[in-house]
Image (cartoon, rainbow, N blue to C red):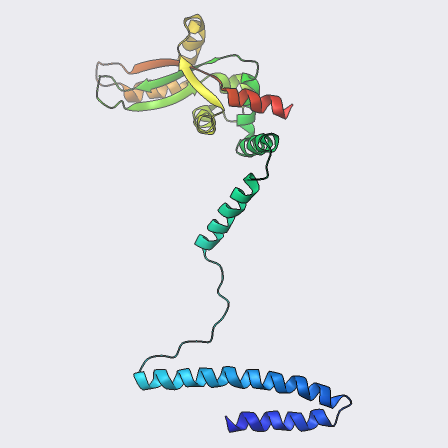
Length: 225
């Protein structure tokens, strides 16, 4: 500790010889006392831990925020924001989040369904009446091709995603769409699923359904116009 004091005393002599040195010296003295106090406390901690045979604790440093603290802060910000958000603003936020969650091909499907029309959907399942149904294909539909999507064979995936967002819903079979179901059954992916689900002489089971926009989907389309 003596060498630290010697260095600081030398700096004090230099400060006195400069213009305004007394002011500088007064500020430096306060800084000196603070620095000495921190160093003494740390050295005391080193001595104490050395006697106990334990490693010394490092000087306190700012720790980076953890993922938990960041998540908590984000949640708190959202809750605080909701207190001052109007219904109109909340609706706009919802629509924006839904649109950002859509892929370009899914936006095409949204447009194709926007007039209120329904399209055929087919599930292909293995034969039998088990407690749990095993599907070889779900959500096959002609809506993808009708919408002009870039990846028609990914229509089942698009419909799954749009279902999860609450934009479309699956309804019962419509008898008047008989021809549409027959066209869908000629699709290559549906034929492959029928072959995969077949069990010997027992043919695969076919579930005929429909897809259309939900109220949220209609609201989203109208808001985007």
